[in-house]
Length: 154
Image 1: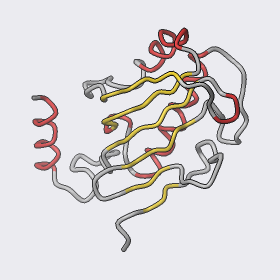
Image 2: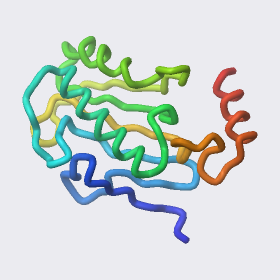
Image 3: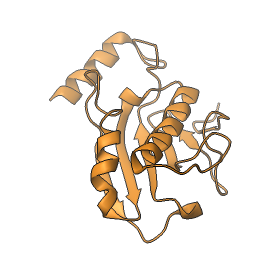
């Protein structure tokens, strides 16, 4: 079995180029930048909070398809075309990451000149594999999971 597995789900926005929605490795899940789009690929209009929620909905769908969860996200990168949207994006972002006792992931937020398809926000992330609905994580034991939590808590 290959150590790399492409993740592709119809429940998230289709990719806009020659890349995978995500790549699963034995140690991490790398999710490509997610646009504020519906699973159909449609780019609806709306507030920055709504657009941010669409990016995160796509991330959740990919996490689910890989067997992971949003609580296992360790790093995100947010791309904005205008930093004036920083506060509104943060307001939506904090509703999804670092909730229900999960640690907030590390994060970078950068302003860029343009994003694909003319969107104003894009979010990519890295997550630990497994753990969705499985106390011990994918292929691991509960003891290993508890050890990971201890490391994260310190």
